[in-house]
Image (tube, rainbow, N blue to C red; front, side, top):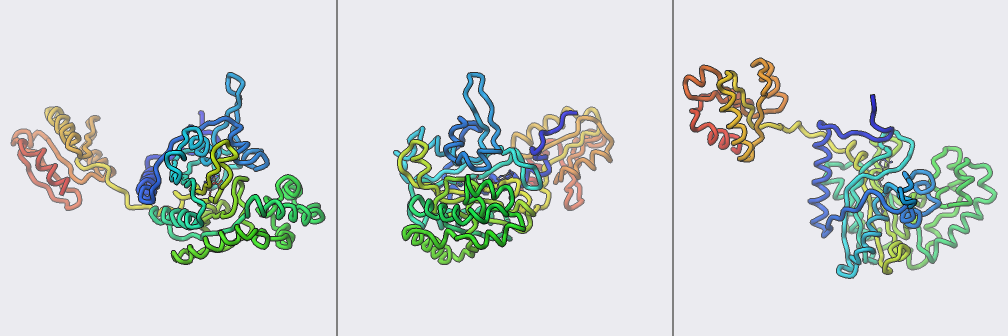
Length: 416
Ligand code: HAM
């Protein structure tokens, strides 16, 4: 039997209510903050990600689904949304008509990581991006929006972690400092750190290997080496978060896995997620739009992993999927029931019947399983008397309703 590809998963009908909730919360909330939706393709030119995310990042170096197109070009399934959105913003000159552009997107992303709980090869993100804002106020607002989104999904136990990774003025000097500090330390560290000490020293700060932790603690900290502009920006972001009553923890090691970040970076983690504890991550990426061929516009945003968020969304009571379950017991009742079913559906109600002619008992069970609020029975006796027997499932009461008034009766009851 053919099975789902490793690292992909099906969202089954029983789980889908949670997904609808996460999607509806995104659309409702983001609109209130002035964001509009954008939908970009799931594959792009490979170069976009190599240039946008950074050739030395794990995502680009090890995790992309890249394939040759039939005409010889190289295409890649998007591993994240930001690069594609930036490409679309530039291509359609969206910043010309709206220099303060707020957009969001929802959809599948693809990374060839080692699958485990909360980590998949196809996963879904809700992604939010704001372009053209340099003020620290938007950093605080975007972070506040990220938390408001979790809140709208009913998720409250989490921690906001914050850092500043500096900018093009101060980071190069810091990275150089890090590289020098790592020169004599790296040989005794894990193979990943040894490699990164040279290729991407910032990523050493991300290492989780226990034996390396004491060494990493001795490395210089970016927050001690920010230029005046970055330090002032970061201080103002923190002040505004405090103003808004948003608690956070500073973590000078939060460098994130994508190269485009400058200044503010943040993640929200939850202890309930296990090893893959980050439910969302984001930051500022001034310079990316220009690097990809667009105007010199600032950018900031975040993405939420929906598979991880779904693990945190509290289950709700199962919602009934059926207003009226029709039970034509006599063959003669079937035609009438089919017409009534259509009329009920046309008037906006969820109506169902079992056309397979199963026993009364098994049909009642089916009605129960569907959460039917009313069951309308039409047997020989009812046909002879020109009525339906209507059973109110919650109250366990039933009554006769004349055939000519049945549609109005059910509409009135179901909409009450
Ligand atoms: P990211 O931290 O790579 O950032 O991903 C954001 C979120 O996507 C993570 O916190 C996690 O919840 C989810 N995620 C990532 N990889 C996987 C995976 N393999 N399986 C399941 N969930 C996953 C970005 O993607 C940036 N583009 C965010 C951003 C937007 N920054 C600025 N704007």
